[in-house]
Image (cartoon, rainbow, N blue to C red):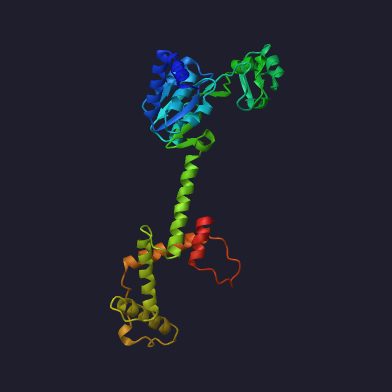
Length: 351
């Protein structure tokens, strides 16, 4: 196209369209996350209520599809990727929340609604067992006509069992629409249907945003616990695990000192208590009341000097080891030499 032809084409665009595109561009540039939502089938009053509910967290902007496409293509942020979703009755939605939060809010705002004849069932339609509350009459025949197991019982029409009357994807007949309306069954949800959202240079589709937040949080917590176990068992210090490693090392050093009877000032009280306990145990095995030295008879055994820090370290170390062993895969055999603490940590993390 020549430059003169381009100028003539530009000049033919009505002023109101230029203004509308400029406003759409401003809208798109004003939010960190921008998406396209389907609005087909939403009554005007309900749509306005949804927009009010989203006020403060997201904004919905409706316009002609041609102008929406032009605005998306004018914004130099990769938003042109959203053009493929501009089809049918759609609107733009903008938010400073992340795409996952936006999807969650939109799903939560959806409400049940009746389904009309000619519409496609969004899911399997089931008429539940129970009393319909309808007096005996021709309605029992209408229920049976659409496939429900119904009969007159105790002075009213009752559905005798859950009745599957339509599969997902099938078209709703007029007879079924009338029955569902009479029973107050609303088998579809009405709301803003997110088709795609662009945020920080990345395009997200609904199936990528539909995550179980609690399950995701549990997975992250499990991974963090596994990483901590791996770090401690592999003796790999990090900001999070260094205190536990130092406390565990303190406990191990004290245990070694007691076993080797090292006469360290910090260990002497425990060594004395250990020796006294061994002496009393030996004396108890001898059938002689004088087996215990005279100076120890009637004297209560000395208690080992408490070491809160070492005890805490030992407890934490034991807890970590127990957790790692519980999560680790069982060893192939007892002769496998590659069964160190690092292996237990890997088992806890990936098992």
